[in-house]
Amino acid sequence: MVSALCRVFGPHNLELAEDVVQEALLRALREWPFRGVPDDPRAWLTRVARNRALDLLRRDASLARKAPLLRVEEGSGPLPEVFFDGEVEDDTLRMVFTCCHPAVPREARVALTLKTVGGFGVPEIARAYLAKPATIAQRLVRAKRRIREAGVRFEVPAGEQLPARLDSVLEVLYLVFNEGYAAASGEAALRADVCAEAIRLAEKVAAHPATALPRAHALAALLLLQGARLPARTDDGGDPVLLPGQDRSRWDPGMLARGFAHLERAARGGHLSPYHLEAGIAAAHAAAPSFEATDWPYILTLYDALLAVKPSPVASLNRAVALAMGEGPGPALEAVDGLADHPALAEYPLLHAVRGDLLARLGETGRAAACFRRALELPLSEPDRRLMERRARECEAEGRAETRLPAAGQVFGT
Amino acid sequence: MPNYVLFLHEDPADWAGVSPEEMQRVIEKYRAWHEGLVRDGRLVEGYKLVDGSGRTIVRRGGETSETDGPYAEAREIVGGLFVVQADGYDAAAEIARECPALEYGTRIELREVDPT
Image (cartoon, each protein chain N blue to C red):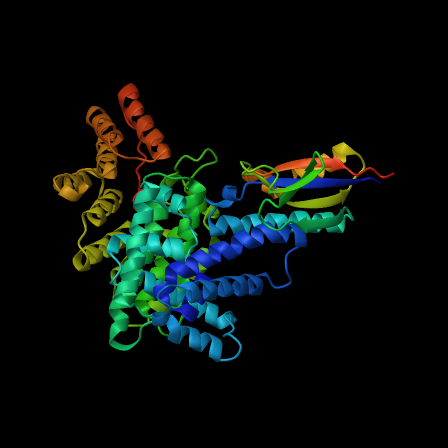
């Protein structure tokens, strides 16, 4: 609804649109219980929100500046019907492009998208981000001001603008998903909601004729193939279940099917984006009937290709995990040790978790335990903390480690 | 079967921190609750009162005076009321207990209507 109102009033009134939607919902909440829900609740809410917005705009001291808008609104007979099914889709996409506009500071785009398009509350976003609500609120205020000042147009861009703007949208959706998938903490249900929202928007981008480029399909494929594993990633007690131990029958078959369909569409084009390669890795896992039957050499080549187009220490770490599966822990440990000095990984608990695991598999339980202890000094989710704690204790107590290995795509969000 | 009145005492500020998503969930719960009452033939009336504290009229020593609200310091107001049919206080209380507003700080005063 915020999106629809933005189309009527312009994105410079994003804040106004949000406020009046909130007010309309509040009014509904306090009236409908007594009167019953109206036949067309959305039409009721839209009418109330729109009338309220018009009231506020009329009252605004800078009426003169907004007068043209009001003339259009009042002079053109009945107000534009805000909801048509097709246009709702378009409005959502326009809103996504607005939230991910280059004028919006990069670090605010994810929060703004979650808030404005996903309808997440500031406290929820703050919990997902491990940030104070005030910090998020401030970030949002600044972002909205930037949108206003830069005169961002509420549209799905076309022509020369499209590729760069689309890349920003895809990047934001990728980050939104990862926030939910690999967040260092936060409630499982909330994180699943965040993932579902990223998937919903990625599929919308891939479905719209203007934006359905191969890399948009590749991102949708990646998120669906990864997201399909969510139900199997935690046990009943909320503890993480690593890839080798996952019950593959709990992977969501509908999401896997949609993921493979997007992957197929993504392949219809000459360009190979990092999303293609990451989706390919996820697909290799999804296609394997069991952990043991996973095609590790193929996954390794995909990692090599990924690192060639988009070098990243985290991807290198994941490659090392695949290497361990294909060629054993020895070469993998060498690769991980080569990454240990990377500044981006210094505070990354999974580096130590992987190192510990490889050492344990090589029988070096004392050094392995030290690695798990080191990981425990860094920020970890409560379930991951329990897992590290358990592994450290096992290494210390039993003098030998169990041979389970956190695998690519599991702990790492690849 | 006697009628019971549910007075919903609420503080509008209770709703201030609720996100739009959450509001939609509450509305959905209310819809289910409301429809259930209608389906079971329990709901007699529902009244939403106009926001604000209203006025209080009293007569003291032959002088009628009128003030705003029940008392000025009250933040809580009766936001609305329901009249439901129930077979005794326990049954009426059961209906009230299911009211979604309870989760958000609303207090429900339950009174039986004297049938005579």
